[in-house]
Amino acid sequence: MPMEQQFTIAVNQLGYRSKDAKMAMITGESAGFRLVDHETGKVVWEGQTRPAAEDAASGITVSRGDFSAWEQPGTYRIEAGDGQSSYPFVISEAVYEAAHQALLKAFYYFRCGMDLEEKHAGPWKHAACHLAPALVYGEEARTIDAWGGWHDAGDYGKYVVPGAKAVADLLLAYECYPQAFQRAVPVPETDGATPDVLHECRYELEWMLRMQDEESGGVFHKLTTLRFPGPDVMPEDDTAELYITPISATATGCFAAVMAMAARVYAPYDSAFAASCLQAAERAWTWLERHPEYPGFRNPPEIFTGEYGDEQDMDERYWAAAELYRTTGESRYHEAFGQYARQDSFDKYELGWADMGGYGTISYLMSAREQEPELAARLQAGLQQRAAELADVSLQDGFGISLRPEQYIWGSNMLVMNHAMLLLIADRLSGSKAYERWALEHVHYLFGANVMGMSYVTGLGSRPILHPHHRPSEGDGVEAPVPGLVSGGPNYGKQDDYAREHLADRAPAASFADVMESYATNEVTIYWNSPAVFVLSHFV
Ligand code: G3I
Ligand code: 9MR
Ligand code: ZN
Image (cartoon, rainbow, N blue to C red; front, top):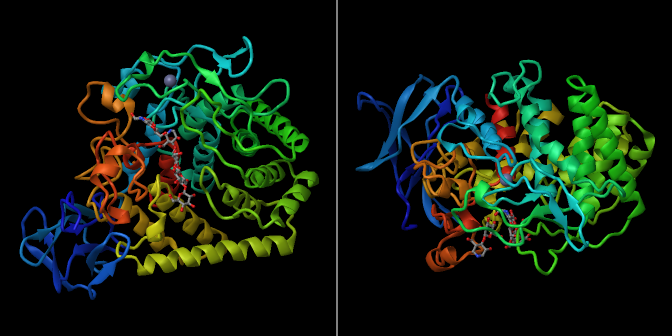
């Protein structure tokens, strides 16, 4: 059993909606379990656990207790054996609203280039940062004033590719679940007319527009200092020279895609902004056409910040073609999409920062434009098959999620939420509810039903992570970390010194430490938050 494990019965610490399936994950062999009213201490319901099973990913034996039958609102805990207990949790009609809001609010805290005022940021306020124009790496004296946007993560780099994934998830969430965004998460731009999630995304989109090369339409890969600043440096104190690195095909491809999406989503609210997004997308597409083959991005020799290297740019081009077709209806984009779709050298169902093909597939299948019937049928079948595979793995898994042991890699919580997103989208596109239940198991995992017994989101749940690798949380003098941040999660790769030293013999899903030093397990990023916003949008 992992040493840091602080529970013996894991539950979603946020709780369960009355009518949903509810499962307690009990460590070890266990016969019966009890549902206890947390206020009165009375046992309100008893059940038998399912036969205990060895869980390959977490390295423990898990007995599961199904208490779905109990629907009555209240605050409860689960008990088993003698002395085993879960954290208290609620059963209620509405459970995930505050978490949904906090996960979205996190993007405001990631903002670069403006004062985060107390009015919006509370104790996590700080002064404006990174306002100096950036030098274009490798050129004599050219600078670009690309202020704004979101910091990527616990570091202050700004990278186009992961930024595009984050915006895509949020815009998709808004397109699929507009009603989930009716409650305001006030941001400085709140005007009562435009949904706040669109204000938030626009802050990033406008930064991305500044990252497009005026001359060629290509998009610069990233904007960072040469090295990461110290682990507790506040953003406004990170004053080293900023550099913009060369254009990449991956950045240009996903830029074209996300700008085409924005052109569609913002059109009803601000047609001038929408038009400028479309024009930027078209210019990026022209660059892609002029550079059918382009070497993958590598950090220049003096730059040691995040690389987001990726040799395969066909998935980004495929996604760009899909969004441009969906937004404009022009047949040239449809043809290009079809051509990429016939290549089998890239994955068409992934939603990661490296493999973005899933966004292209989803866009094509959700589009109201005319489709090539055979192609649409093939993509739909592929998507449904992927969802079926994920549900299958979830069914076998001790904690009910779809990660195989070898998938607990750096940022495994992104895979957890990406898989849940794919399950929900598969349901949506087939008009069924076959996978919703499995998607919800992934939410339960994120908020505590995991072998660590921790909520992987700051500020949410009874035992949330407290020490994320996040420079502002370390440097701001406030005891609590910035709230609403999704940690990367277990990573069996042991890719930092802390993990190598302390987690060496841990099972994959237990390869996690809630310490600032472990950036390979406990950093936070915009693109680990964004799929979680999508998924919770379904359940609010
Ligand atoms: O794809 C392979 C997979 O095939 C293989 O089985 C597995 C085994 O380790 O590795 C997979 O690759 C991993 C890759 O992420 C997958 O996305 C690499 O090992 C792993 O090193 C790589 O980690 C990335 C990390 O940067 C290091 O480059 C993370 O995805 C990425 O999220 C992270 O991003 C950093 C930025 O560079 C800087 N800002 C913070 C951010 C989060 O830590
Ligand atoms: O703090 C950095 C974190 O934000 C990055 O995601 C991570 C991976 O590139 O690197 C961290 O910086 C570490 C560096 O790579 C190696 N020396 C220790 C740094 C942590 O303070
Ligand atoms: Zn900044």
